[in-house]
Length: 225
Image (cartoon, rainbow, N blue to C red; front, top):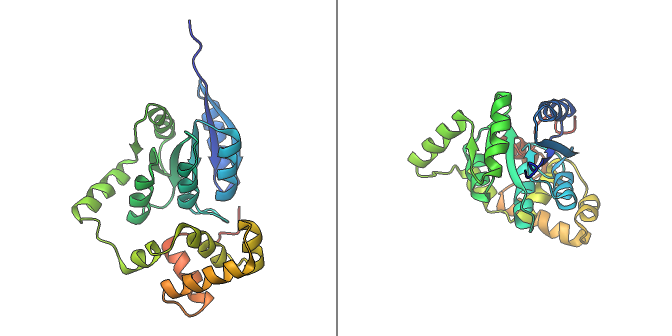
C-alpha cells in the first residue's frame, strides 16, 4: 500500500499569534506538516524558493513586501507551490488581483478552522476555495463589470518593481536601504521614487503613506508583530 504524501506548508504572517495558531491547527491534521514560517512577504518568497513547500498560507498586509506582490513573485518562479490567502481584508481589488495572479484560495481570518484545512486539500487537487463572503464579492464584482476606482487605477499604473519600492517608501525605508534590499543602485531607486510620485500624482511622502494605508498595503501598526 502506497504511503500517503505529506502536504508541506509554509505560513506567512507578520503576527506571531496568527502563525502559532495556524501551526497548532495544522499540526493536528494527519498528512499535513508546517515546514517553515515567515514574518514578511520577502521572507515568504525566500522560504518558498528554498523549501519548495506544497502550499504557502499568505497574509496580505505584511512589511517589506505585501502578500499580493509576494504571491506574484512566487507565481513567477518555477515552483509549483499553491498559494492560499488568509487575510482580514476583503477589498474587491485584492480579490480581483490575487485571483488573476492564480492563488488557490482566499479566506478571511474569521474563517472556521475546517475551512482552512479544506482550502489546503482543495488546493492540492488543483481547485480554488473561497470564503462565502469572498465568493459573494466576486459575483458582485462581475456584475459591476470590474469597475475600478481612480485610486485603484493609479496604483495599477505602477510596475511590479515600483510597487515594491512604493511599499518600502511608505514604511519609511531610506533610498539607501531600499537600494540595498533590492540590490540596485541608489540612483535607480531615486528614479523609481520620482516615477512613483508622478504616476500617483503626489507631492510628498505624507500623501504616499496615507494612500498606502487607504489601499491596505500597510496598516497603522505595520511595524508590529
